[in-house]
Length: 250
Image (cartoon, rainbow, N blue to C red; front, side, top):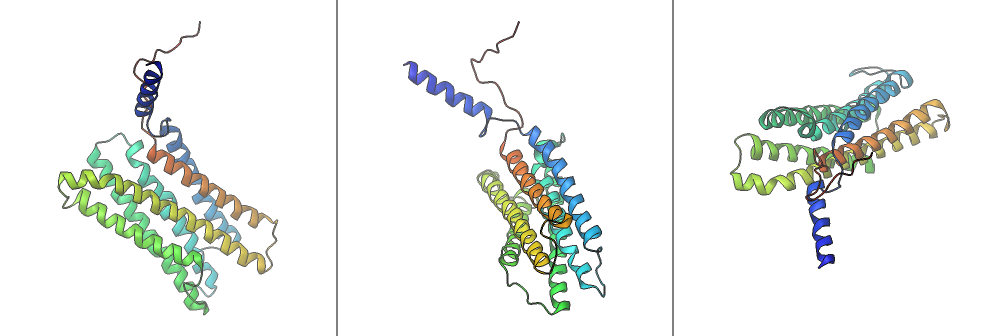
């Protein structure tokens, strides 16, 4: 009897605390800070170390520099903000849904520009396209991201599916969205590794400031991805379990 009571109490505690037992708020704050940090770092890298950004230039590397900037700020930073928007914004569900939709649309738009920059750089420089794991996973990620956005728009926004379909689809929509976001983070890590390897093989110092900056940016992106995922699965608030009495210290 005592054992069953303890088991029931543990189950109640898990239900009230959410899937991981911690509130989302600290991780959403961390996501904001890490998102800004990642965006600043990639801009410093591409502008200060790689020479700047350009849509057209004799130096084709300036065109390529648009690729990491648009992909990281779009998919990783803005995409992350879209995912956690439901947890952090105080407005109505409909307003948060619209913001969620718009932020993801911006992320996709920047992602398309980033992929365009990579293809343009390769074509202008006589380099083959889609030969690396980074490019394969990246192209697959943006396709899945687009499918996810279209399905979410049609099902949850306009014209909107029946209530039963929306209810049954929501957990899968959330799960698939997190899967695509994790793919985006993985693609970014592959991209950092690939580019840094190319640069080091071309003479970049392995322990120089630029190599350190690229590796540090990649670490920040990993932490950002983890913060966004935890924010998404953690409850907005952790409630005390039934029967719990707080012990006051004298």
